[in-house]
Image (cartoon, rainbow, N blue to C red; front, side, top):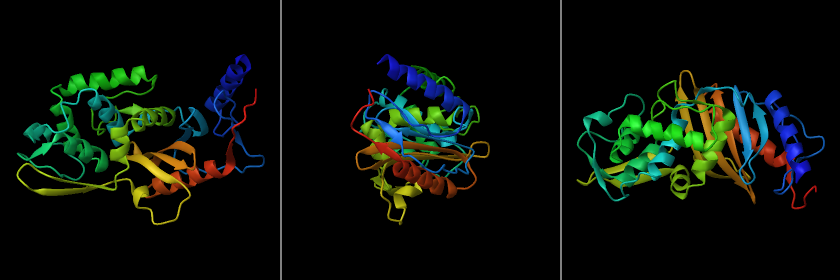
Length: 293
């Protein structure tokens, strides 16, 4: 056990200095880079791949540099909401103070919907207004809610992650590729968030009978190429300063990873880069049952 901890500490120090994927030793099933594996290129400014089962990073690129994370913020919002949920079947009426600039508007002033509809519209469509309405449905002020978001970040050990609003429009909502992966791990571990972020679309009806349909901003869910992996969930984000961002959880057999791409150059490139990165990890790492010690 002592030697395992010592090796992991040394690897962590190297990870902080370089952008490469090391062989990993742990008390969990051994994950090792195959001999002769070629390096992977990531065009995005920052990135990371986390082994979802045992919390080891298989790839990093500038993964500890702080930057805005845009709508990836909504993963933390949804986590905090689940601890303050007034009830999925509760009816909420859209109010004037639920209006937020930016993004497509799916809900309108005076419409009455279930809290569950707000939750899914927030995560599936990344709807800013639905997200603010979700926050207001808890009875907390936005300031109180954001304080809980920052407290949850602290509880999760995300020391470089800070929030100033629950939507992600502010450039003061910041994190790193490494901490986004850890945040996503905590979020995707919750069944409600996992199911919402894995939905290609969500259909619901307002209290007055208006039918609504929202589609996911996660284009990997619509990918027509035959992939060896399965998409278990994902969350997009974009602002001018954050660039195009994406975090996803993917599975190949019994192997699961969380991939983060921050500040990609294009809307579609973030998905292509995520696929390339994840395919490289699955093709170049061995998940072994035996242990080194």
